[in-house]
Image 1 (tube, helix red, strand yellow):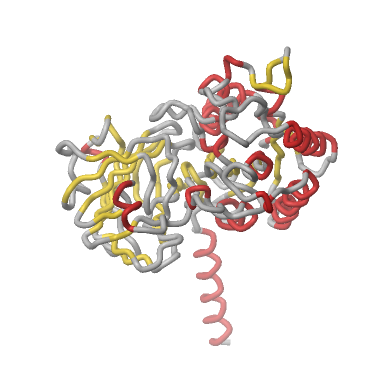
Image 2: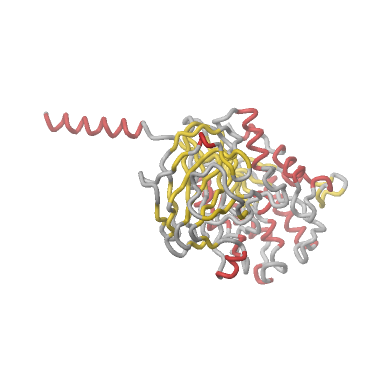
Length: 410
């Protein structure tokens, strides 16, 4: 009888512990790409650090009172030492709101060594953030470190200073950086009903040619609409786009384009905290890159792209996610040499027809119709064009964000 009582107590304690687990959703995120291959390139791109602090600025999409940070050494070839880290609300430029500053710890320690190709989570921190806040995450790198977990096209300015400045409210004049390094996510504790939406794609999801520091990517527009309609703590929106990314091939020369979408789908979508929905906008680079930035033997058909999209659909459904397909946007007349041909346009139209009519996705978001020129549907409306006839500008991204039916997210 005594043994039974002990077992009952142990079981009760386990149930209580499980019931107290925090429900996390992503309020900000970015997808990493591999390291540059040589030190000279890293120096030129400010991706080698020693006895320096990086203060990285991110913009939230969901609010709450408790947060944690994801630091990434993905694609790193050796362990990296984070000597200290802080989190605070950003005031302006590199300056923070001093009263909001908190030390970040990792398993109770103020420093952490991240193994090669690994990720670490910080301990939770009590910090009130709104669903549209700028947050500063400062990490000190005491030893020579090659940047890893890198998101190259941030469209956001971050700052580099000498020495350990993690707790400093204001910095002396500092170097600037428009990549996120060693940083892949910011999570917020939320009600059990809250969920993460992942926007998964290429440069058009990443916000290429949008205004730097203005948060005008289409996932930002979606997040702002959800905040206005659904409230502060219901949905987090993560932008997991990488410029130049393809579904079916790794980059031929430019590692900034990231590994193929099928390879990164597990890490960048399925492993996100609280994920329930994913929007996929991928395939235009599979069409455009061969003959431009990729060899001709990587030419793919519309059927090849569709097969890749079907793989994402199956994997999302296997994990209980709803997955929505975005139609590929116009690129006729793009200024990128070799990227467009009439044959390639035919592939885009075939992929879009399948997305619209197959019923394979749980819903369709017609980004193509949202930004095309009604008088010339094969082209982007000039008012929406970022300038290269492939990437939208701020107005185009706004139109894309408003093309999403919010009833898709229940």
